[in-house]
Length: 314
Image (cartoon, rainbow, N blue to C red; front, side, top):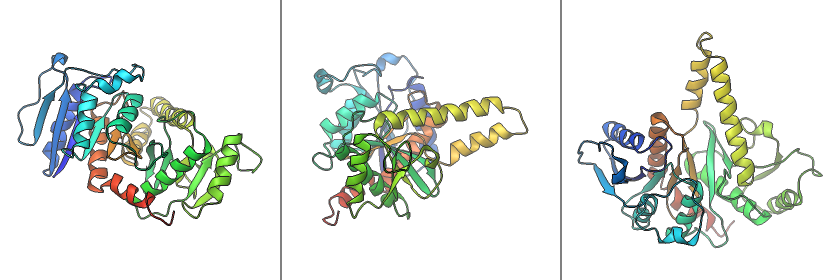
């Protein structure tokens, strides 16, 4: 039985999509149990009773625009804290939330702990699932020195090894592939990665290599990664709106978007499996994020990554 802890209070559309998403998942998967952490002040009808669905009312909700301050770690009755604590206590196998990225990263580090000292957790987004290719980081970290970017390369490579039969091939996102290009941080990261036996490093990657090409782990700092991702999603939405009604072209784009990669991003580098869905997720995206969480829980992703990063051969 895979046990999902679902933070229902983080999304822009409210807890209803979490309730409906959980019911949908339970109707299609017989080996899934879901615990929903919600605010009783949401004034919504709760899901009908189900033998694999638990509801836990929490008195506090962490809003998406709250600052990451010390008091955050004392808010033990918040839905996000409670769901992460269930993961730490081994009463769940994965947490799924649409809430604040900053709060999730901070609380995950505090409650779960990191896989290795000085290894910063990162958000990974799959750009394509077959063959698997991913982007690291998407916003968990903004100011990234070379050592942090090297850690992202390790996390991304371990992720690919854990979830596919692909050989990881790391590329460092840059403004060009020439050795003279890039900031001091980028050039130093390139030097550090070039000196390592693992992960396999293929050098700089340009933006044109995000969705195709030999490199399947694209590394960048969180600000760049988040901007790249949002720009890509915005372009896709723009194209779908412009092509709507033209011989089904829009539907083709939408089908590709829905089926060729998982919904949400995975936080790696902490002692637990976490999926962060987009704050504006609709019901389909909520269901996709939960299914993503189920997939990584089945693979015991964090344990596989921890085993790989603790290998003496690295």
